[in-house]
Image (cartoon, rainbow, N blue to C red; front, side):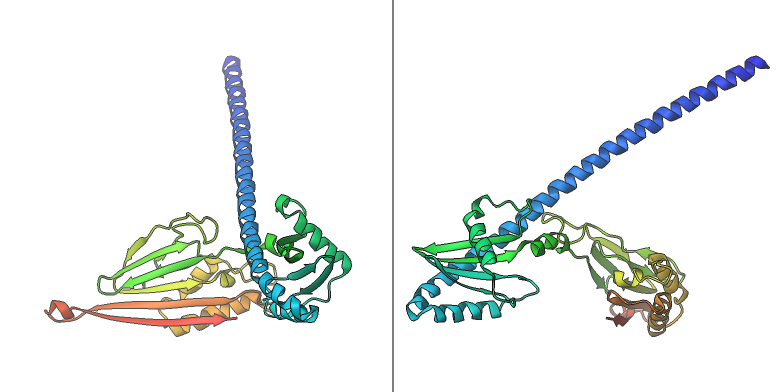
Length: 333
């Protein structure tokens, strides 16, 4: 008996040792993968931010190149004429997309300047813009600079255009969107779709079975070489298509819990025997009830579409199928 206990203890010890080795290997492997992913994300960020800044620098240079000939012509009419001209340019700038947009025109040691919707520039700010334009060839978007500039000169006359860098850095993280494209072929009773990361979307039948229209590729704006697969679903009897924006599933309640995709699907399934209008109203009420007195921070949109196919009592093949499509959209901004 003692021998059996010793043997069992040895087996348990060996098993624990093996388990410990497996855990260590898993930790090491996971750590290597995490480091690899982090490196890839960092490299991708650097590539994207350089691409954004190169594009913006090219735009600023084109602007400076376009403005300079008019400045040279107006220079003969005095500095007030040049000032009015660049004022008119900045007044037409979109402050949302081009914040802190400045134009500085230099004639030797003299300068004329204007900013987009901002107070007059201080001497220090003007000096910073001029200094940044002189070092634009060595400008590195990954370093801590606050100005992106481009300059174009002819003799002693020069046009410098600058813009705030922090806006451009945030644009790197904001240039993406989800999208779902759906085609319903009522003749062949087929629904085709391609989904660029849009969530959620379902095709629901009267029995309560829900087929999720899962993503067939990444969201738009992440990879310029990305491709998306197309998927096909057969339609029969009565099918209900439901597509929502994430503002509905990401509605927060008083307990900071999201409404969620699971709760939305349960709500839609509970309404499978109701009309589209009734389904829309009930879903809107449940989302509003979950939000309570909280603030709506995103758009809340639900699209419902129902496909109904009936077999007609006729032998005429061309008239064999009767089709009806009902649609309702609930949008709350």
